[in-house]
Amino acid sequence: MREALRNDALILVNAAGIAGPGKRSDPEFDAKFDKAFDVNFRGTLHLCGAFGNQMKSTKGSIVNITSIAAMIAGSAARRD
Image (cartoon, rainbow, N blue to C red; front, side, top):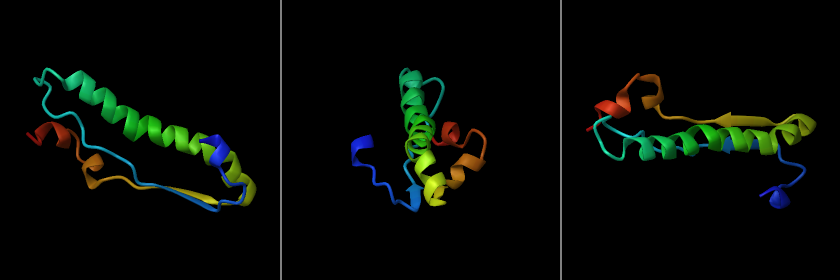
């Protein structure tokens, strides 16, 4: 990915995200939680890390967009 980065980017918009794992009783809960954490948290972390210094040098902006579900505790667990 780093080879493809341009040196003149002014904005990074990150809108990637997936739903949480569902009910804790689901036998696949841990694997689904890990996948959601990887996409929703680590994805944002890695994108900001990859573009952070470039955004500083161009005085650009990073915009992270999330779902309203992120504001409701346990919303993914109540989905099922």
